[in-house]
Image (cartoon, rainbow, N blue to C red; front, top):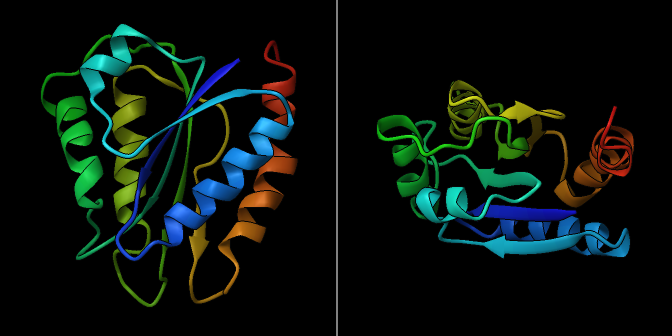
Length: 153
């Protein structure tokens, strides 16, 4: 199974979570490709089995700069990606009104163009954990891996 991991981060926490998640997926023998500057048209031309977006939220609920062009394409000129399975892991801080808004907007954009959410979205709160990788690990074990290991479910 081919999994494309789209990563957006401002201060690096999402990169750390992505590193951990990718390592875990590779241990389960999935073919994983990391993309830190995703192009929606290129992805649509060579669709993976699963899109996994791992992102932080910045500013007033915005996506990091490297994911903005991908998101804008989904909203303004969506490529044919209907049926593509996906999930989103988003990091945020619940002390802000816009907690995880960037990642949730990405989730909505993927759903709106017909992609199929297979788990989540997982919202990791910086106010609740200093180890976002452990929260992502629990999500992998309980929600994501069971679906990936049994794609017909």
